[in-house]
Length: 396
Image: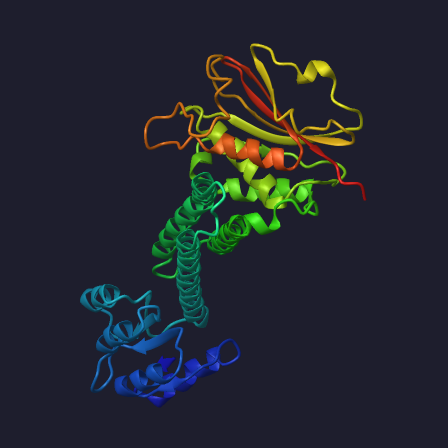
């Protein structure tokens, strides 16, 4: 929307923007407000000095009408006070006449991007609220009666990680929005916004898996391609707050094999293992995720417990090749031998109160067991720990 009480400047700006945007014009503050009430306005270019209602007064009323309208102010009579007042009322940019065409185009493009980001955050918040309401309704209806306490705790744990990432990403977007005031642009904004959408979608996917747990489990039809799961894990962990001070390395397989496991189950298992590794030390460490192919059954020696190793879920593991082994390895302090037998127990944790639920590894054990896979953990004090998931390959 272009607002100026002089015909010449209005038409000049219309010509500048008519090929880029849907342009509407108003010759006064009241006319502009009427337009904003009757239709959506993403960005407005306002002349400060207008007869009747000034551009600054119009700015304040537009923000009351819709705080997400981004406003660029124009004036031929720049003073420190007018600039300060415009910024205080929420203008995203302030240009003086005469202006360069490239300058006004950049300012409006920046304003449109800010509006798109604001809309995306509102939509993300709405979807998250719907998810939380669905989880509350599901709990009240008692549709997760079987092992309800454990399953509901698992839901909360699984959703916690991506929701945390969503929160952090939104903070980053807010910081970028603040940084763009005055016309600057950050190349990371669009990438961050895309990741917000991906994180919200992941939350919804995880919730649906648990809300339909009794109906869908045991169909025997679940499968996932390893490289897709590894790529999803890398994307989710890239913005996770616990990964900030550490280095994550994810390697894809030369051949993209499929395994008999629900895709979300596999991604969540790998995320839990990686996040557990990130939390193992306050010092920077390397967490690597890789996979390799096993055309033969696992040897008995690999399945034998030692003081430094444990082999779990052996009761359901068929050890029928071909198999894929997925390794999550860290360079952390290792696991104490006295804790090695307990780390997969529900609610067991060595973390301080409030920093861990003790559910992450227990969930991994259950999900891998559902897929008829097995887990091997090997740890060396002061060197690091490797968790290996052995899963059956789906024949194509």
